[in-house]
Length: 211
Image (cartoon, rainbow, N blue to C red; front, side, top):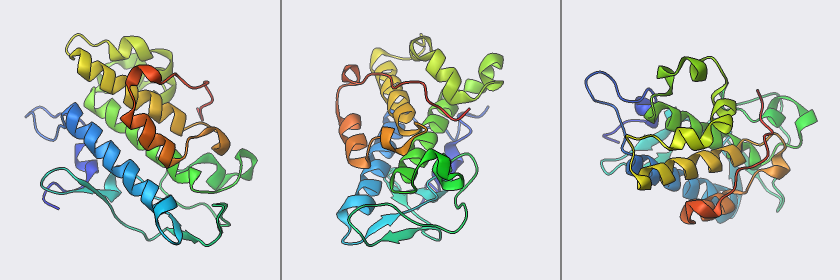
C-alpha cells in the first residue's frame, strides 16, 4: 500500500504542502470504506463487525483505493440480527460508539461501526479544512461546533461550489452516523445511498451528540 494509511493525512496539509488529500480523493476514500463496511455487515455469509474503524486502519493503494485492515478486534455475528455480546469495551478512544462502553445507550451491533465511520469522516473533513486555525472550533468538540456552524463552514470562499457541496454532504452523513442511539444511525447500506445521492437531498439530523 504505497500511500500508507489514512492516518498519514489526518493532520491536513503541512507547511510543505504535503500529506493533503483533495476533496475528490477524500470523498472517493469515504465511499470505498462505506462499501467495504457494507460488505462486512451484509455481503458476507457471516456478518463481521470490525470494532476499530479509524484512519490508522484504512490503507491506501497507489490510486487511493481504500482497504480496511486490522481485524484483531472484529466479532462474527452468526444470527440474522446484528446484536452482539462483548466482554468489555473495545476500539480506540475517540471512535468508540457510546453503547460499546455503556449499555444505557443501546445494544452493541453493526451500528457501532457506523459510529466509528462517522467520527472518521468528521475528523478527516476537519483536517482537510485545517479547522485548528479557528480558536473557537479548536476549543469545542468538533462535531458539536460544525453542527452549529454547518452552512458558514461549508461556504468557504476558497472552495468551489462543487467542493462546498461535497463538504456539506460528508458532514451531514457524518453527523447522522454519530447519533447517540444506534437505532437513529443509518445502516451502511443507507450510508452508501446517501453518499451517492445529491447533497441537497440530505437534511441535518437532530442534535444528539456525545459531547
